[in-house]
Amino acid sequence: MESPRDPDIQPKPDKTRLVGTLAIDLGNSTTVIAFQPETNKDPKLLDIPPISRFEGEIPSLVWQSQEEKLDILIGQQVLEAGLTEQEKVNICSDFKRWIGSTNQPLVSASKLLAEQAGEILIQQIWAKLPPELSIKRLVLTAPIETYRAYRSWLYQVCRLLPVDEIALVDEPTAAAMGAAVPVGSKLLVVDIGGGTIDLSLVALEGGEGRADPIAQLLRFAGEDLEGKSNQVIRCAKVLGKAGQRLGGKDFDRWIAGHLCPNEALTESLLNAAEKLKCRLSDDGLKATEVLEEAIEPTAFDKTQSLRLTRNQLEELLIKNGLLKSLTALLSQTLQSANANNCTLRDIHGAVLVGGGARMPLIRNWLKKHIYPVNILTPPPIEAVVKGALSLTPNVTIQDVLRNGVSLRCWDKKSQKHIWHPLFIAGQTWPTSKNLELILSASKENQVEIDLVIGETSSQNNFEVIYINGVPKIKEELTESTINAWIDKPVTFDLNPPGKPGEDCVQLNFSINSSRYLQVEGKDIRTGVKIPKKSLGIIN
Image (cartoon, rainbow, N blue to C red; front, side):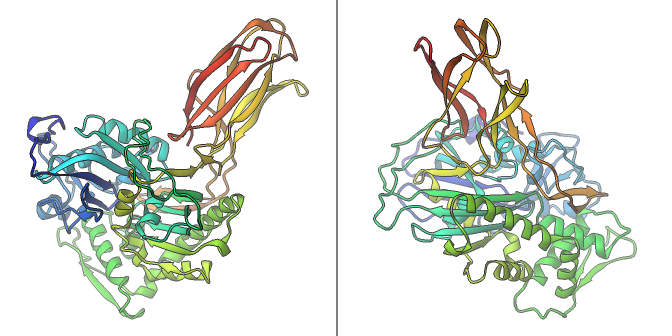
């Protein structure tokens, strides 16, 4: 694969070129791209032959030759070449959900890791951008389920791209902005994608006489670019959210596994299952009408087609625990929102996006569980990418922590180390006020104090596991645990040495706009200031 710094893909100075922002929403089944010129507020979905299937939509498919590594096809090229209709070819699909995961099951015939496939896709899209575009800013979206690892991966992928500014936007927040609702609204965002389900309760600040915030761009590397724009805009704040690594691709596997229980889940079979699922989601279809979708004849010796009704599809989804899982995620989201003084009664509407937004079963489930809240229906595929463009650089995002973070302390009474909470799950960031702690020495002539930070693992009552390639929802409670960060602890010297029980240092903890836990303070005894240090990024 060619380096992104190769001269033939570098922007060339040309007054006729359109300068603006490119947004890429990497999806499990479809990657959506849009461009917004600096001189035009209206974003446009990009058509990039030969990799686009429709305007703005690129199938999330990567094929790499086993013999020649530079021989690569992506998106529609893979479909046009008929590679998905062949067995045992080097195609990587269904990979977005596994980026950042430490346990990646083999879900395709490719030997590429999820991160490698994602990198190839993004860099190949960049290399094939229309030559008349000059990209000043690149905006990418990230799921909440693996946000921390995903962010790190994206930075490594994009750090060599010839673009001045790179920003990262939370997918559910971008979806809320894509609904184009008025400032001051509170929205429930339900994003049913190809590989993940994300629920988020989002508040759009402003209105009612409140001053709108100054524009701020969050650079991907963590640099604060506040002041780049003089526009006055609104601010999005996430009040509660929950997510799960489950999506439309899993529904395809359920369909294929149900109708062909003794067959391997090949690309041909899964493609037929996906087409059947989409056709069964048509609002004008009768629930008992039988639809048939042909399977490529090379895939099987006997079975040549899939047959299913909408009623049967919905029974299958319910049997596999989809609605139970959705209900649990909604409950988790609302519990987090309650901690921020927001209930269903305060919500102005619900935004349903992603491919799953087309399914009547999901729409009916949502109507039932949030009644009488109205459901808003922006274009389900492009809502996130257009929302991402509207968020950058015009909005300051206040998000919430999915996991809590604690400091290991010595408890004099129990004579053992304990975890003292600093910020709990649901805490908004960046923080507006510092958390102050006073630490004492625990032994005679103590010459230093170590700050050992631990992060609370998030609870997930409905864990998705894979058995023979078919996803199963495991309905078991997982206990919350605190895991110490593996990074070397930050150490503060005590001069003079401390005495047991003596108050030594006053520390002020905060979380900045890049989600880094920071600390500063002073030695209480001498007044010597402790300069600000970053302890690490919180999930």
